[in-house]
Image (cartoon, rainbow over all chains, first blue to last red; front, side, top):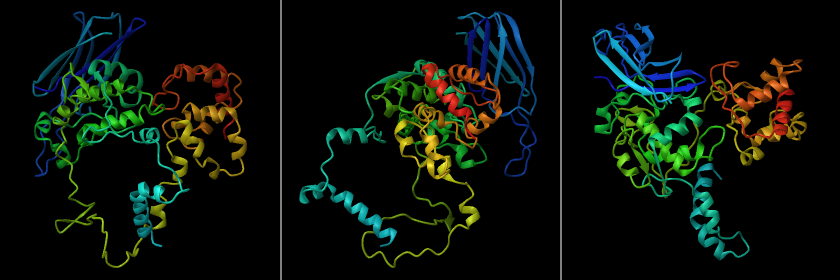
Amino acid sequence: MADPMRIRAVARDGVVNVRVLMSHEMETGQRKDASGKLVPAHFIRNVTATHQGKTVLTALWGPAVAKNPYLEFEFKGGQKGEKIIVTWEDNKGDKRSDEGVIN
Amino acid sequence: MSRWNKALCAMALVLAANQAWAQHSGIGRAATPAEIAAWDTDVRGDFKGLPPGSGSVSHGEVVWEAKCASCHGSFGESNQFFPPLIGGVTAEDIRTGRVAGLAKGGEQRSTVMKLSKISTLWDYINRAMPWQAPKTLTADEVYALTAYILHQGNIVPGSFVLSDKNMAEVQARLPNRNGMTRKHGLWETRGKPDVKAVACMRNCGPEPRITSQLPDHAAGSHGDLVEQYRLFGPVRMAALPVASAVPAAAPAVVSDPGRSLADKNGCLACHAPKQRTIGPALAEIASKYRGDSGAESRLVAKVRAGGQGVWGTTPMPPFQNLQEQDLRAMVQWILKAE
């Protein structure tokens, strides 16, 4: 299981700004190791963010996203104290879900 | 006298300083305890010099968002302007005290990867941060920020409270605590370091002779370093040889009240006169708004509120505590820059 995500969400004027730092290798599948063998691809495919049961963001990612990706987005309608849940799933079927509190 | 001998003499002078002032009346005086205390501000690896205090990760998060995140990123991950503080450390590294990623190479090195003494991190934040207003953090804030960085690096849990009492416990968990060695040179030749620095006190052999130097194009590759000094705080600014760069115009510039206010408030930490550093050069700002009569009021409002996006993604922090007339004088001075 990968390390937890860091999530910070701040509500201002009815808009919630969410910042997420994920911990993931994000191997492209094009790199070779010291012995010349290809390092197998390992990257996040799907990202979803839900707030009060409603999906506020979905993203389809590929191997072009950097290692330990940083994601920032905004959505309307969140209140202080509510939770935002971010989930990712990678090409090997690994999943990780973490939640942050809006403040 | 060679430089070598001068250095030895200087060292001898320091060693003898205590007796010297007593033996030679009329030369100097002993430093007062208050003078020594003002000078002796460092925190050592054995935590001597560390003031009492404590700070939690959650307090650190609040201070971080207000004073640090604009340059270092919310999680210390930002690679936009400074190398990232966080990343590249595994649970295995924390167990062994050697960061595997450093030995393997090919990865960007972050601060938590390289750090071998927790006192260094504390001392650095305490003395040098935030960039535009160093030495403004309280001891408790420095503890809190250190705890926050350690938490982002997965070295301490989110509920952790760092204090002068438990710094040693954290030291024992630092990922690169066993990674520092002095038994190497810049290069290795046949398995040995190329140089070995051992102070020689007697029978030191022939006087060293310079046999090669950097070619001019390499020695000058960074331009005029005086112009690139990191400028902050009223004390250092007063001593800086700003005039040397533009001898003719310098007296007029220095006498401008806007200039001295800009020195005092740390504007020049990020805005150099002619060269873009962290923020745009003053001359760039002036030429962008030349002939724009409304620019002064707009810029005054902008300095107060902070901003981002006009000159790139590095944000400028808000400066809300400036006096209106001071702020106007500074903006007027900036708009005159060439």
